[in-house]
Length: 328
Image (cartoon, rainbow, N blue to C red; front, side, top):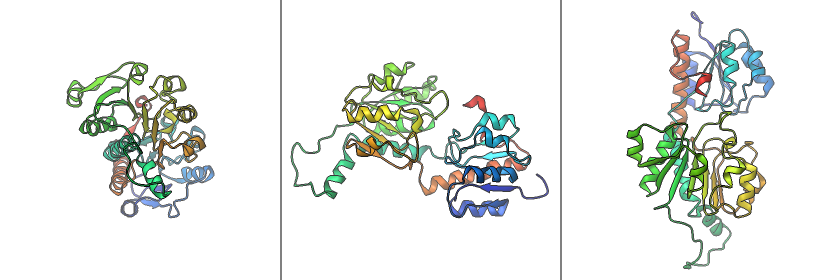
């Protein structure tokens, strides 16, 4: 694409600073309305773009990739997860895929810790009690929650975000346990005083709180299946700021309704933006609308990563955040 600015089509509205810089560097077509593109609009964009900048709401499947125009050589995803893109199909067609790793770590870990605090201490229930005028004064036995200090936290997925959650949780006196495809470096394990479990089943059965921090891949779909959820103690809590598809949401909702789990904090859902009606009605659940990474700083950092990936690719260099099927 030398000699002219590449045509870059952006599927959603991005922070103003990011959009302005894209317009300066590329022939950038922006989505000023922020309405998600329909499959037909995505197909049209992919037919003429040199670079597509999608987000998690855009499903770039094999069918769309097959119909992509000859000029489309880069899909620069605005997001860390790439479960919205058929990376293998893109690679087979000669299209490079990039993402924005690392920039959301601290923001997502902050939100995870907020949910770990909010659910056992019944923060949202307390807010509702005030809003509904049910607070009649302090009582020794009203709105009792559970202390975090001394409890065991089991982290499913000890990558960047999992480790950031562990560092925060240690400050609250939680014991750190984790399940991962392989143990982390011994120095990290020692720093976090973390216990590794190669058996997810064994870890789940022993934890007071479980935090899901692994990506959604074919291997992690319903990783916390109905069978595994039922291994957890009735007194346990579960928090998910990763992807909704990692948990069998129907089973989770049923267990919460029956008191087979003490509570849940969920920022993601299996069929977003739809939420299981049982979860919406549950008193022991804190629900958030996928806002774990939603900070001004994080979104700008994501945009800057996208720009670096596009610029590197256009200049003939390997983009720093290329995603290949073997990584998934």
